[in-house]
Image (cartoon, rainbow, N blue to C red; front, side):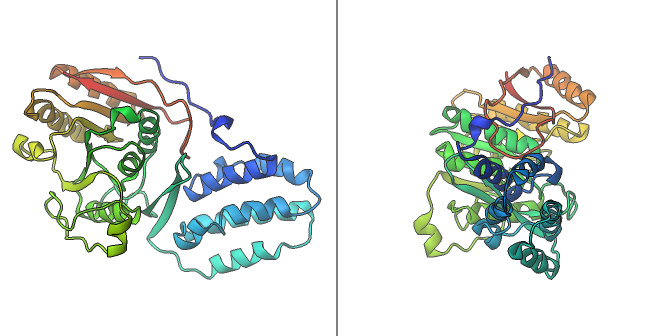
Length: 356
């Protein structure tokens, strides 16, 4: 298989605005999602500042990032905001301009804020809507990596939005849902009939359920999962909820039975992201895929899409070899055409469609 070239952010994805506004919007999309600071468009901002007579470009960026309503209500980590503001201050001081009061007030507020173990990140959809998630500040937290959003999940969500017909009016099962980004995006924009989020770690399931409710999707008080606490749902949330019938299920890939899988809406589509990185876990994944391919009562196997970040080519190749051993064929799905989310554009990510 030929490696896919890293995709670059396409200007077509951005509104046609004046340069200052366009750069500010790029900062907004990346900042709200907690994109790596070095990947934000600093050079473009510097060029605009060179041609500016005042600090208005910096103020515009400030208004669309740190002072954005989403950031004020659902703040990013203290460290991230502090580092971002420090970089803005460097750009401002390099101009030799008069101090920008709002900028120094913002850094003062952040310096007086205590860091927490959790933060929020907001991912903007083409519709203008946003998906806001509570995530862990640390990559590994409470014994799991499932409390942060990974690049392959963003990539899969991006592909799903371009291929909504795959999910429209169908029953979808997601394996290893983590913080819920991919499933929430599909539930909001692709109109599935039912959507089942699943994971195994208790802390991940709790956070996942909270993120689903945070984004206005209706989660019944009792789900079909085991070990998930009953959820209290306020009347306002019930009135405002739209979307598919949603379930959160606890699934242990090693122990789950065909009967248990058959209870999960007999999925038409099965998806997963960033679950091929450890041979032991991957073997468990193949086991549950075998059961899924054989558990639909109508005899039709579900469509299966697995998004992989290829960190270790040997692990990725081993996954493909093991699929072949159990009679599961695979093909690479074409990449999404537009870059909608902020993630590492140089990461080697691919989506496989699996067949029997």
